[in-house]
Length: 208
Image (tube, helix red, strand yellow):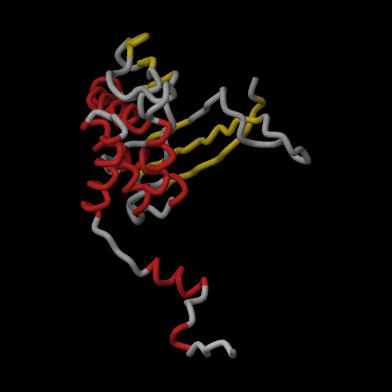
């Protein structure tokens, strides 16, 4: 028995056609925020933290940084059920001299911690001119550019350095075993002709 012939219109689309079809799908910003917020609340986050994390992840998506945007919500939320991500509470103040603040983040959501730190810094800038934050034991803070934009939108200069010494994510040149930790750096400021200017760099050091 001969196999039935399949017409050209019945053939499945090629990979590049499927990718183009996916890229043509559009969702509103509000719908994506609601999706992310509901996902994080279902994972046990407080409503305020869930809304903040979802808002910044969607902003990251809108800035074109897809690797640390809303698609990363699934692995993040799956880890939130473990001790690696504290789901409620607030940071502990280790030191506060007005212009210098040190927090113990208690492994709370990093994006939420950074959002709170920036808000406090904005309040104190008129008095101190420069505000410096150090946050230990924070969970992943995501896209530094999305965080920095909150400062540049207000006309401020910001510099962010992030390090997780417990992580081993980079192999040295010529090596095959991850033993280095990434240390991303980001500085950003506002310009007249371009509303947001960001400079980033990344270095590595050995994780012990």
